[in-house]
Amino acid sequence: MTSTPSDTTEPGSTAYRTTETAAAEKSFILAHCSDPHFASVDHIKKRDFFNKRLFGYLRWKLKRRAEHSDELLTILNKDLQRTKPDHIAITGDLTQLSLPVEFKMAHDWLRTLGTGDRVTIVPGNHDTYVKTDWHHTFTHWLDYMRGDLQEKRAPLVICLDDLFPTLRIRNRIAIIGVNTAYPSGPHLATGKIGSNQLVKLEAILKHLSGKRFFRIILIHHPPLPGIVSWRKSLTDAASLQLLLKRHRAELILSGHTHKAIHGELNSPSGLIPAIGAPSVSSISHKGERRSRYYLYKITSTAGGWHVHLNERVFSLEQHRFVDGPQQDFTFPFVAN
Image (cartoon, rainbow, N blue to C red; front, side, top):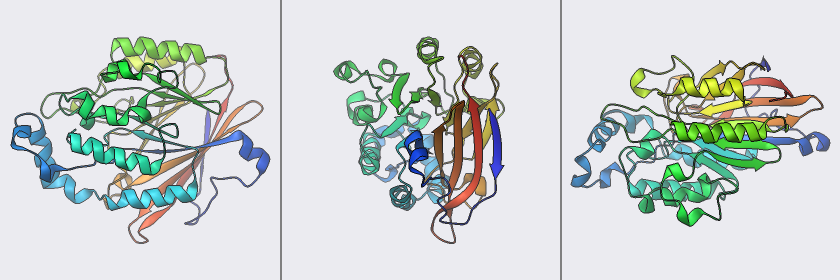
């Protein structure tokens, strides 16, 4: 993989899209965002305070409520209607306290983005803040989570372990969902993949090896070292890193940190970009923490793949998303 940064283009530019019919037929545009954090804390019941939700409630009231705006999600929808991605990926934390009403709010928003075959999500740690009733929570999102071959067995799904990892194929783009969300203790936001899921993930990557798919892993907790403190970390990140050295992917997309992250993981056949998105509902004045989403134009070439990345950053002055940093990546075809 080689990458080349590009200068920021003028607001409103459509540099990430092509007008050439031949190129467009080979291109696929993926939009990635994360951590919308739908919250309904004002309707929380007293019994919900007898667990970890109490800490999340206080954190939202004292800090996060001032940093997030649902209005940005409406503005995001309008911008996506202009940029017209082929697919949308959301890497977790759609809710704040994993309340059933928040799952319903997130589902209503997902429906405005598109149907389940055009939008893929993976859960985040806030979506599993505490143990919940599947039928009042994640069942609302099933169409947006399950893989292409899991539709027939959907009635048998009663937990996230029944679903993940997932695989969706869209125009030679392999979208692989990995779940790192499990209930953790107070003041912890750790994630894990788990040995069973790692075995299944290796089987998926092995099946895709050498078949010239562009492989994208969606994961909530970033697998990069040193990005977050231990209490927010992916506890088995080292196991995933070893797996990717045996069976690589082209791109890893994550959320969780509430800031923009650009990193890389090593593999024998080259570096794997690992890019993390901040909260898409954040109105922070800090640039790296402010709302943005990412547009990846993935184009098949004779010898591999070309990817143009355009960051759509929310402008506090213009009250809309504008073009931000841009970067180009080249991935040659490899045996694995």
